[in-house]
Image (cartoon, rainbow over all chains, first blue to last red):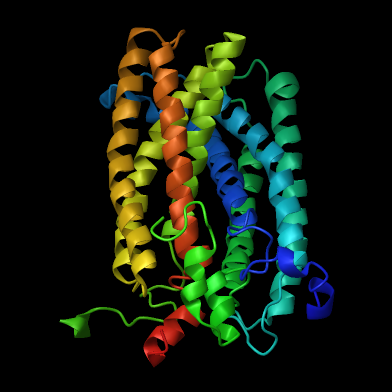
Length: 210
Length: 166
């Protein structure tokens, strides 16, 4: 968004361009990605359980197939819930972003293209994650309630395809931070040609050393 | 010796992007969600959630050692340019190594508890989970400071360091 418009918030914004020192979106992303990937991972382990029985026995770890599917289900539900605030925080912080306009990323995209794709991709991934949670629920409680293998192979396949999308999407997000310096205090101060000593007073409570 | 190492890119890394912040997804999300599951399982008296918690902790245990390895490589190449940045990185490093021990110990304890009785969870374990949750939050906050305040491994900061501006 334009500098004049963002100046409406004026004093409220710190050197990172946000009204708080640490961006929220990248932290919520830990939860979205961790929960989704592990959900699919455990469903995959559950689906291949007959092959792994001996491994679990060798490691002396008691494991049952239905418990592995519990992890797949509950982690997916948690991923679907937590991704709403992830996307909301992402849009809030993207609306306040002021990336440089004269550089391209390692993927050859400008900062605006990177932000637009990351925004569209975020909404798409939210829809996909919620859709996967609903699909997973149907398999668990209706379609495959009495089957040993609670998930369809197609569900796992789509899950792995979403991993690929997440990789591309996550890289765009990482480029916004590490290459365009969006909401990074040090990067923004350096670009503006300012002194970095202000960094020590950004977080007054745990400032300085911590 | 340096001739045999891969060249460093504009993030001061021998590979395209930082790996540590990605691997830590699987420690942060799993450790926190495990505690949520323990709370839900205790309140609803449904032992199913205890199993979900155990498997998440087991996954977090494997992940944190990978996170520490990448963290150590990337910390070594980070060039913290000011005293507070260096102090933050040191504390993050010490707490990271400590957490690898703490998470492994808690998961080991959980393995024993689960082997004896997988249907209930003692209050003391919930206390350890609460403590771990606090430590994970603090550790994440320290890592956040390294990236979002000091900009370690970002192109802008690496460039400034190479030019001698920082």
